[in-house]
Length: 355
Ligand SMILES: NC(=O)c1ccc[n+]([C@@H]2O[C@H](COP(=O)([O-])OP(=O)(O)OC[C@H]3O[C@@H](n4cnc5c(N)ncnc54)[C@H](O)[C@@H]3O)[C@@H](O)[C@H]2O)c1
Ligand SMILES: [Zn+2]
Image 1 (cartoon, rainbow, N blue to C red):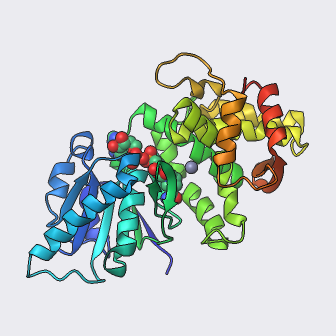
Image 2 (cartoon, rainbow, N blue to C red):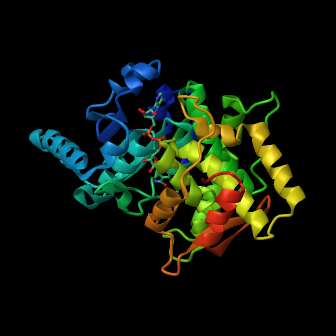
């Protein structure tokens, strides 16, 4: 069964509009930051009988934290002899991607699988991580090494929560939003006021989600290769994320600019078309200045040694020291291509990403 997407104005509508969320038979795992960050959240969460606050971030996806959380939930629901948690119960994940990944994994394994509902509260989770059925934990510091494919029954997108996110969260989202717009022409990401506003993101959200799902449906468990298209901007994006300590979203934005450079070097894109794409991305807010990070210390390059090390760690690297890289031919026309590591490094040096 394909998951339902429900678009709501306010959190308070969830209980009446969802077919799966109820006050009594849900295990709600939520980001504790929401208690302060989202007006009305405290009242909303107070309605549920079993809710568990967590601290968002990569450490939530560690085995140690997972074990603590699972034990706490298990203790609470099994201490009450009137309860019998069965497969008709649901896990409701309210938070960004880290909460969705950890709670999604919990839902997929606890009691051999409970129903899952995502309520993403960051743009990144709203457009990306809460769709497509991937759950994840980290292992020995390496991201997403443990996980399952487990589709949510519902993903509930709440306008008031997403619209209240800060400028910095909005910038973090641009990478993944523009990725979908490059992969699929139906995603009309455009700014009318000189920059993309939160309302622009909200309006384009259904198209962006559909663009991701269209690819996921062709290769749900990532066995055919097609789903790798969603890695556009991620090969070098992961390098920027690890080396410069930037958020995932900003790193993907930079990774897309790098993918344009590689596509030009590989003659997939003409110089003119590549420049037009760069200019379009600049109007959306994606330019090399995203690499500044919070300290505003100016554009930062990554050393070749570090880039090579990080690229070789990346699971997409094949033994031949080449990478399955997503190149751009045009808007709506991307493809997988095996690119030698050497070419990535020389393009990085030439285009000023590496030193
Ligand atoms: N499963 C997938 O398909 C998939 C895809 C992409 C990314 N991811 C994962 O998603 C995670 C990144 O996503 P993220 O940035 O949403 O993660 P996150 O959960 O770490 O949230 C980022 C920050 O925003 C805060 N936050 C959340 N909602 C807020 C709100 N409404 N107002 C104010 N602050 C709020 C959190 O407390 C946290 O500090 C990574 O762990 C990544 O691996 C998963
Ligand atoms: Zn991503």
